[in-house]
Amino acid sequence: MKLTFLGTGTSFGVPQIGCGCAVCRSEDPRDRRTRVGAIVEDAGLRLLLDTPPELRLQLIAAQVDRVDAVLFTHEHADHTHGIDDIRAISVRRDGALPMYGPDETLRSLAQRFPYIFDAAMKPLPGTSKPEGFAHALEPGETVRIGHLDVTPVALPHGRIRVFGYRIGPLAYVTDAKELPEGALAVLRGADVLVLNALFRTSHPTHLSIGEAVDAARRVGARQTYLTHLTHETAHAALESALPADIRPAYDGLSVEF
Image 1 (tube, rainbow, N blue to C red):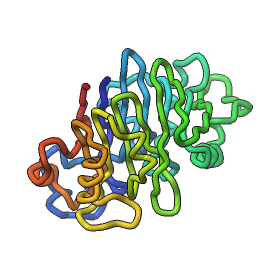
Image 2 (image 1 turned 90 degrees about the vertical axis):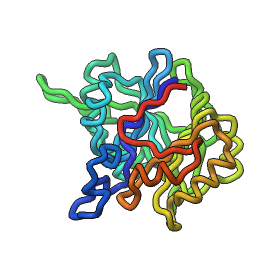
Image 3 (image 1 turned 180 degrees about the vertical axis):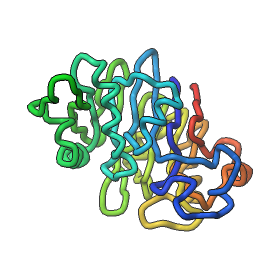
Image 4 (image 1 turned 120 degrees about the vertical axis):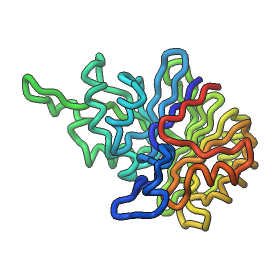
């Protein structure tokens, strides 16, 4: 299995508009962070996790020209508003691109982008449109996508829930505030864990860096990667402060396991 981080930044991205801090001015390419998304590949199957606003540029940078399905974590704009970019993928498919996620997320996307999900909305001759087919998931109920078993995990994110995903040896969690016991039962045993880690200080809707380290210890994966990072944290400084089995991710990082 291969995991590629398309984007690892917070909703502002890094550099942040109008900011001249040291991280926003950093020449370390690992400090340039687009909004969070990832690709999971296994035996020819490709799953896209979220459709962040920079999706077109992210897929080009990762040399990805095809995906077989999309898994949405939640409806927030930094995780969904690149959805129109799937047109370049769906036009080459025989049928709409399958899209999985929480029911409320898929309903919200269908309201915001009806042309993607409504098969009755036909493009004019000589034009095209992105096409997606929604599959609502329930927490804890495993779905088979291709040859992979995917289990959604419900997690708190302020006033809404987000879905983390257990995909074979991978546990993927973003935008969560905590890992409840029910979620830990699904995530434990993973070889690789991905966790959001916002600030060094506490935040009402996201794990802090310290909370993410504690959560990683509770899951017990061989290797943990932190994502959803802000301009308050330089990659090199964070990497030097973390234990060897917990590392900050960066845009374009690929991990095989």
